[in-house]
Structure formats: C-alpha cells, structure tokens
Length: 193
Image (cartoon, rainbow, N blue to C red; front, side, top):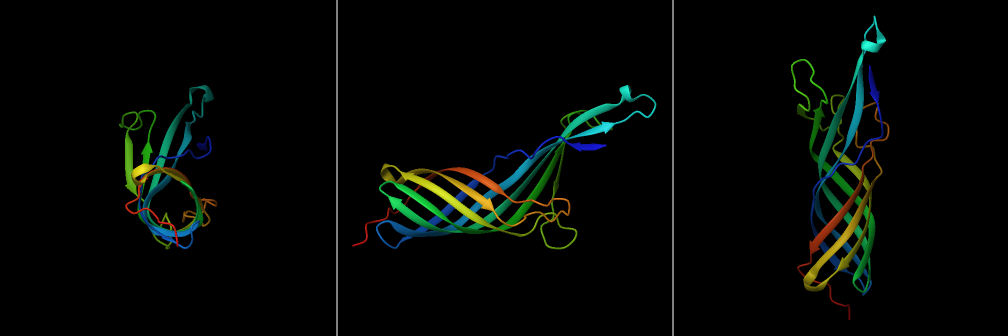
C-alpha cells in the first residue's frame, strides 16, 4: 500500500540569466532576455508491507522522490525604477529541455542498500507517454537593489499559470519558484533627457 504523507517540498535549483533593459523614461523600462531555470519538488511517501496473518508484523518504509526540470525561460518585464530600487512584473514563457526523477529508499529492499538512488529521465512532450509538458507559461515578479560598480541583489517569484505535468493524476502541476539573485550590470541605465 502506498500513502502520500505530505505536501510537496521545495527543491533548490540553479538560475542563470542574461538580461537586457531598454529605458522608456526615467522611471519606466522594459526588460527581456534568456534564463536557465531549474524547477521541481521533493515528495515523501510511505509503503506499507502488510502481513496478512499478523498485522503487527507488517513494516512501513518511507521513501523520497525528487523531480527536477530544467527550462530555458524568456521573460518580458515592465520595470519601475525608484532611485536604486527596481520593481518589475510581466509574463514568461519557458521551454523544458531536461527532466529527471530520483527515487531514494530509506531501508534496504530486494538486495539494494538503504539510501540507494534510482535516477531516470522523464519524457518531455505532448503525447500519452510523456511526463512533462514542453511549454510552461506564467507571471514573473521581481525586486532589485543596485549597489556601486553595477553589482545588484534581488528576489524573483515565478507564478506558473499552466499545468507543467502530463500525468493524469496531477491536476495542479503548476510551478511556484522563489529565487534570490546576485547580478552585475555591464551598462547602467542613464537618465532620459
């Protein structure tokens, strides 16, 4: 018997971005570019091995599944600048380029040691055998603070709108990603005359 024992947990991933900003006025700008973004989750579940003769002899083991999807992401953000602070929002379109699943056991099972990991690729596509949809669409929210010499730190939140999963039993496979960013601006924006 397999039982889900909790909500999906957050997964730490990598975010690399190259962005270009076009200033419309002294306070408003348009930003776009290309990002490599890893998204996913960790799920824990328990497997009950029941003993039909004596229920007290049954065992329960907890296992973990980690699913990670790598995307190429195209954001288009409207930016509002206030002194050194920038606030932005806009849509993004993401294309899945790689998807992996790692299953980890908590106890030895059938000759495999505890904590043994099974890693496999998940198929990306729109057919019935696929696990991950190739395209994902959502909204992007960001805040950024610029220091001296073009160095900046910021935070970003991706709110997935479309279901990224092809699995029938996953009704709400929407990505929710919070990112902490450190960046360098090669060319700082000059005031519009």
